[in-house]
Image 1: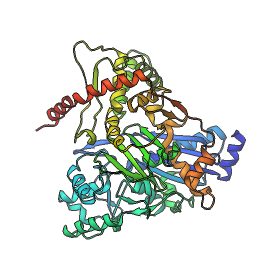
Image 2: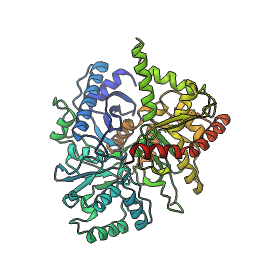
Image 3: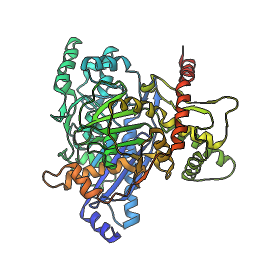
Image 4: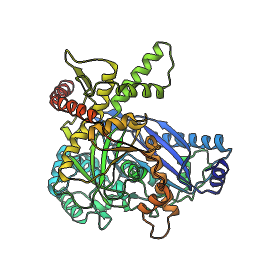
Length: 533
């Protein structure tokens, strides 16, 4: 689209704004009616580990949203000479799962994020009760664990929600949630497009036995599928995004969604037999199913697309955080040596060096467990790098090993899911792991032994994905499905690059993986030593 056309779209409000609150970055993206990003802004942040809990300050949530939007506002002004005051529609996306419990507007306990893995007892009991896997990250597992722990605040809860739903509530006054994000709170009936009624009754009986003053549905947000009306931006909401008062209220919002759902949209992976893999702070692979799984697998989540179709998810808590920490160390070293090298160049250089390493990583071994990892049975984690005498320790092997370790646990989970004979022709990759062209894509293809395709928008998928959902809500034709909208209007010209797995890389990764599995006892001993009494 020409600059003049972009200016016309922004001036007339033919735009959609997507805001995603991610694990390490809050990002805002503005798209026009041709669905291409025309401006962006971001804010960097990190979770905190406080009193045994991974958390974020809710004040920082809106501080980050405001800074991200301010940067987008300045980007629009610089590129197009316009003062942004209105957009056609808005969408909010954020990290799925976790525990935000309120009494009125009061947050009862600090935000408990998806990264916390202390809900094992609740997870196991609920999985047995429902005969449906309830992962430790899910909101209902956090709630039940708090009940089992006898925490005083539980009886005061009148609203339990995820991060995207919380932000949407503050912006619109509406207690609603997109069905994809809701499916990470409580199991969904894919036919009713709502929480599973039988399981609600089962959990209500638990609440009654524990003398809780509420029913499950009473404290959960209302479920909405993609395209539904989810309210409009209030005066208060407009100020929460833009304290300067330039953004006008009255803008319609789409249902808030989780990062898994926006990743599916951004990679056009919401139709049956499609799949995507998101690799950033965490890593997860998702596959849209045509039927229920034959068995209950504790390692496999069942969630939904933003349209409400069933999805199998292999989710790992840890992916690139440890890799990022090492890159930051190299950045610090270059500064000490008197060279101010841009961090993006350091990433690109080191990632490309990984491809020069030996196919198995030179017999080096690393674990990226900054937090616990349920697939391999770790409630807590600690990053670890080790090797034996005779291993080939050089920078190329070091980087390849770090990248292999970032996706090794995902492969272990995928091996479990493969028992179901899931049919996937290729995976769409997105997230920061794929930003350096061809490197993360090649590593992922080797690890999972499937073709991996990556779009040009791979590094910014989530914010773009929720902007697309906002556009769909605003601009769809009557009875136009989300799949039809994406296929016909967004991805009609597929610009993805597909990389087939390299046979030598596949064999090398398999050798590394066997070493990785054997070495899990080393990681377990390190955790016990560092966290033991």
